[in-house]
Length: 198
Image (cartoon, rainbow, N blue to C red; front, side, top):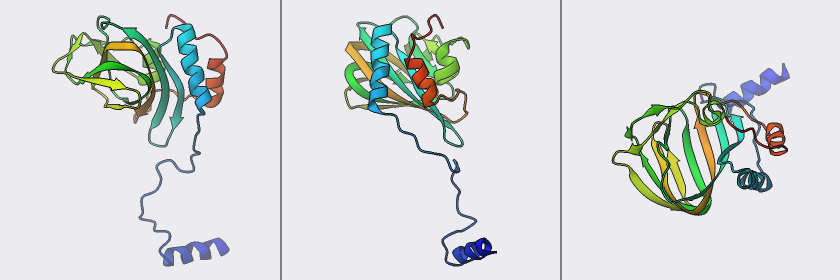
């Protein structure tokens, strides 16, 4: 009875309106990833010659948010068919260190479906394509501190990396195509060599 009276009083005072939008992630906790953990991913990438690693994949109600750390070494020219595109997952890069030339655009030349068995497809960024070039792509010189936004369906292609580039990646996954990954899974991953040949 007391609770009902409190709710009625709150409604009368305008503090609670049943027609107001409600949080899309009801009672979800917040998350913190310490810089030491991010640095451990970069160290692992360098020592084990890895590129892309998923740090977390978090449920945020109507979507998942993935946090990745990427380390890419020097690149004088792009590898064949190295344009990447993801059908359902958008990406935001924050460059932590280094510089590179990154080409962006939606018109991918010689589009080829990425195998569904690839770890990056299964765990990081869902289904998508590779290609050999981006028709009318725009080349950006990205450097430490820069932010890049890559909507789902947009081709992205590193054509030159001066010495190296390290970036934190936020993956926006509205269709929840990637599996969740929590801190315990991250700790377990960091504690042993990464699986190869996936």
